[in-house]
Amino acid sequence: MSMGLAIIGGGAMGRAVAQGARAAGLDLGPLVIAEPDSARRGGLAGLGASVVSSAAEAFRELGRSEGAPGEGVILLAVKPQVFRSVAAELGDVGPRRVLSVMAGVTTAAIRVALGGGARVIRLMPNTPASIRMGVTGLCVGEGAGEEDAARAERLFCAVGDVVRVPEALMDAVTAVSGSGPAYLFYVAEALERAAVDAGFDPPTAARLVRGTLAGASRLLAQGVDPATLRRAVTSKGGTTEAACGVLDARGVDGAVMEAVRAATARGAALSAMVCGPS
Image (cartoon, rainbow, N blue to C red; front, side):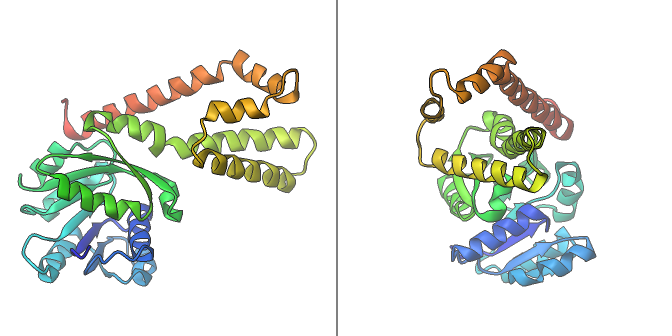
């Protein structure tokens, strides 16, 4: 999949995509990364990319290196709050494919800001992409077709699984899988505190909890229904049943659902702040 790729933003997600694609053997063609922070630019040198200081410079370099005009891909990996200034730097990008991992910024808003001709794919990866175990929600946006979506999918499959969803569900994707690792880390923190409270020293507590969660995640990844796995551990009148009884009594299931609703609503609010009311 040689195309020429300009990554706007040299943060964790931009690096993860570049590293994952290289590790998967994808032919990205010429790769350029825009990173305004000089301290960060040095750390990007090992990616086999040309590292520049601005979005405008990255766009110019992409244009010079494309095999055919307009065939290059732009990956927007910046914070949504700075998108307007980045768009002003880029200007009219023509009919290029534009992939966005920005939370809350709609494909329509991106297309308009970049001149009206871009083929926009919106994605929401999560932090395990940095170890090529992420999950990414993908929606086909303004001006884009199946070939554009397939190319974006191949690129992000290099850092994990890709699930296609309608754009109306992208805020929910952000709430479930984008923020999802934090929910697991929250549980890990609580379990480690409980283990220390039970008498273990912190290193032992961490080893017990993190190993347990890692192993349980591997079981889930085999495709078995989580309720089935939970029932297999829960003997009648046993210790797990006693623990789950407390979780049920405290309404943990309902709290998780409320947490996802709150994150979804916040995503929609951020979208309205950046893009205006829909």
